[in-house]
Length: 519
Image 1 (cartoon, rainbow, N blue to C red):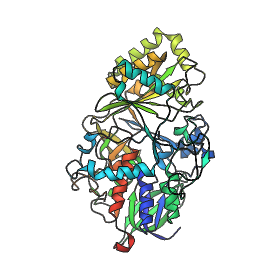
Image 2 (cartoon, rainbow, N blue to C red):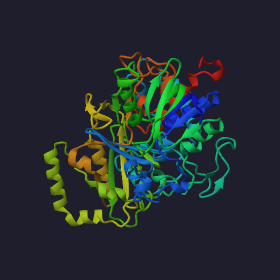
Image 3 (cartoon, one colour):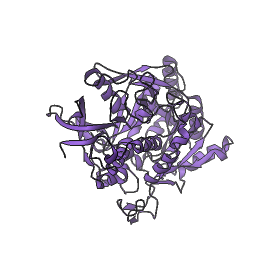
Image 4 (cartoon, one colour):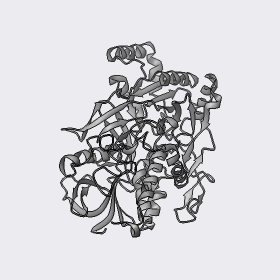
């Protein structure tokens, strides 16, 4: 640890990891501050019933990789740890369709599709993107569904950040000319989202962050930033130990800052700083919050011969239209935690009608529902159907009195009731002799869920339309950048990891080498 750095990066997810490597390569001294823990393959839980190792609740001593955050209008799933969301995400690396590049607050600033094209290619290479080579039961049932709705040509394999190679065989670094860590061929265990225990998943600690350290970057885990003060020629960053609420705050000096804590980290921190030490931050902070307008629907089968847990987390995709698609998501065998958090899917926006339909649905087939809830291996007999669309639905987040931020409506908010998603889920359930379920809050309160919360620090042509400029620099401040999901400025409609990586690669490419810089 130095007393002063050229750049301090707050967060180690896709944007922060890109910034750490590229700034280090340019000759800058870099520190990454991450509130979560370093994880090795042996540190991950065997199943998601091991809440202490899987879930992030530091107040209870749970320092896992999976975090749930509840707002009035949205429930959010996110990742924590050195490597951020890469530790817990489903590996998929899709490019958004054209609508993403031509909508939102950034649409008239640049030709984003062509501007980002070379950086998508870099992101693919760095993240080790490969086409999933094998389908299993969950994928084959989706393929059957595609045939039933005359969409065989819309069923595809996924590009994923996984090293396939020879199953369970360790080899020297296959990606970076031997400069990276050894890797082991995927064995399709389905444990991608509880933490890959076999060294096959291309998480950020195995590419960007691993290489950044070789160029001299420091990584400080289990600490979080509480404040940023501006001085005459630099910034002072205040931070403290994660989970130690009465620990002494420490201070470091830096000439540049990259905010990379994701929407749930960057937005509340910048909103807090605007009120205290950085008043020139745009009033648009916390605006244009989006999800992918998604539905997460569990389908549990009573067929004991089916195995939904086998395969990579997401191995196939069905594009049901230009704006919508469906993906089967799996957990590894034994990871049945969600059994206690789901209720029968009910397609009814009005709360009182929805509750009445729920009671009727349970009363009509009590034994069938009992059988669904008591299947022996929930993960093995359950697939999570992830349905996403790139149509607009926004929220805004303001600092709260009891909580860091609260959600407010901003136009049409995301909905928990997407007719096509529910129809497809019912048909899939019929094919596997199962039933469709959703998260408890969706059924009881109508609150939708998302694994992809985006925006809040969007790109604009000026302070009146965005928080950051086209190069990700915060309006009103020098050498201050935002590189994470909060910079996503339209609805991608797909898993956003690749896009966050590509946008961050472009932003960092514009910063000159240290020898050419005025830092």
